[in-house]
Length: 116
Ligand code: HEC
Image (cartoon, rainbow, N blue to C red):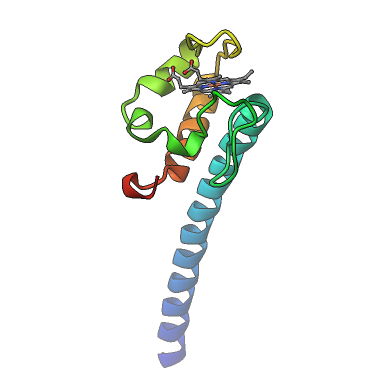
């Protein structure tokens, strides 16, 4: 009886651990996908990571977008076709899933306001 109970608790904890780490893993993969996308499409001009400079002198590093990232506008713009006034920047159209992955990644790398 004791052994049985112990095993039940043990497997319950094990299942929880697996679910939890599975979730974290899925999140990392999603962020990684967003990052890959942006690396492929944008890195020749923008700094995509948490350090480094943009290759294009006028392109802001993605980690400095700040507030802009948090209203949903940019995500929507990615799907509608992201253009800027800058002639150097081509128009990009993202599928919804890709836009979400990209936005999640962008949000994850934003610098805190005072450390700019
Ligand atoms: C060929 C160079 C180039 C590429 C590639 C490029 N950009 Fe840009 N981007 C720029 C430049 C230059 C600016 C700054 C001028 C401006 O604000 O229009 C800019 C500005 C921006 C801005 C801020 C301006 C705004 O309207 O909000 C965003 C957001 C942006 N880029 C996102 C992206 C994303 C996302 C990608 C990849 C899908 C990308 N860019 C790829 C050159 C580029």
